[in-house]
Image (cartoon, rainbow, N blue to C red):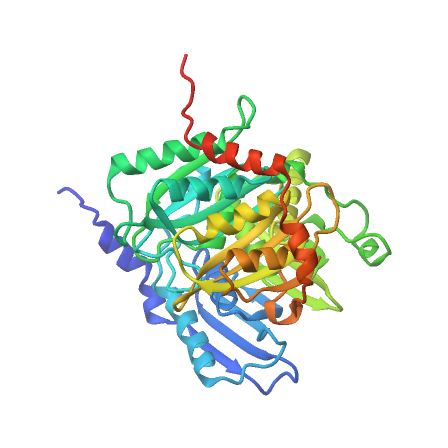
Amino acid sequence: MDTVFDSRLNREIETLTERLHPPRVCIDNNSCRDCTVVKVDSANKYGILLEMVQVLTDLDLCISKSYISSDGGWFMDVFHVTDQAGKKLTDNNLMRQVEKELCATRAKEDIYDETELEICEELKSNYSKQNVSTEHTALEMSGMDRPGLLSEISAVLVDMGCSVTSATAWTHNGRAACIIYVEEASRPGPIKDPKRLAQVKEQLENVVEARGGKGERNNVRLRNFPAGRTHTERRLHQLMYADRDYESCHACHGDTSGYHKKGCDGTHVSISRCEDRGYWVVNVICRDRPKLLFDTVCILRDMQYVVFHAAISSKKSIANQEYFIRHKWNGIALQTKSEKEKFILCIIAAIERRVSHGLRVDICTQNRMGLLSQVTRVIRENGLSIPRVEIGPRGENVVGTFYVTDPSGQQVNPNIVEVLRQESRGSADVVTNHNVPCGLSRSSSSSSSSVNNSSVEDKARYSIGSKLWSHFGKISCNFGPIKS
């Protein structure tokens, strides 16, 4: 008699424990004076820690302390959380939402692809803030960074009749990655025609590769996503990891106690061995900021390490993280010096990607075709760069945060704010802040801008050279590759 294996039956057997023991969530406001304690315990599965942390960060909660234990078939975790203002959770609706979302993580499946780029890409999620919409096509780009790159990409999209609905871009170590959600300008909805997708992709590839050297790593991808299939910031980490942005990182050497000494402000990572249980013990000490735990757990998952135990705490703006890990597949991982060095650099890169400095400009205006192209063009024509940007819809308006820097290292003239206000047709609400890490919350790091109109007019007079370069850049977007 032949034995027949049914994949659906196997899946039912594998999830039997999860269904018999659904997650339990306890939200405690009495144990701690200055934070809310969220306790979660449930049947364990690979990747559950990332899902839990992702839920809390997507709800704009700050995790100040956490204790994690998942050795065996059970997962137990304790999170100390506050809102963006550093206060306890007092909104009953928010607390119910936290409990609902944490329990919903058990219904998600893990989907794995064969290539490194696709590892864990298909994480399901129900969060409206960070997830890819089902109504748009996603443009994914990674490659060499240069001033004006985002401006050139958004100009091509406008010329091709594509409307940008939201966009997020990161830069790190001379590399850039962005995810832009687009739809047809003529009719709302994704770009479904394969020929049209190929045409748009070809034009975008011309822009990305325009000034790159031979053999330069550049990747452009256009794809349509089904419902809630991936998480934007999660995907950006994957793109930059696949692009090997960690290769230009520099590790801080010496005892981690040196971090507290004057002049030592980097990220310290150390690795040791726990022979009794076969764990690798990873210690990370760095400046504390929102989403730090999320960024660290992301890279551990991308490198396919399983976290069995962890302790995370912060004190006086310094964060300490300790992880007890094993590789999911490779039992002899981290045996060589080169493997350990790569591991350390990957951790440092994941932490540094979100920490950009510069002039912060927050924009709120009515949505319209070509808005991203107009704003980035003004920044480029002023000789400035955009190390990080996030822009998307909020009701009938569009809300965006741009970090602006001067490539020459000079301080950015805050008069650029008024130029951007004028480009937004007078309907922008702009907030500025100088040299603040991108991880800081908007409520704690913003101050209202005050600009002198006469100096703004002087700033708005672009040089002839910058105008010519702007027009040349736009024209060059239509050039095709030279085939010999």
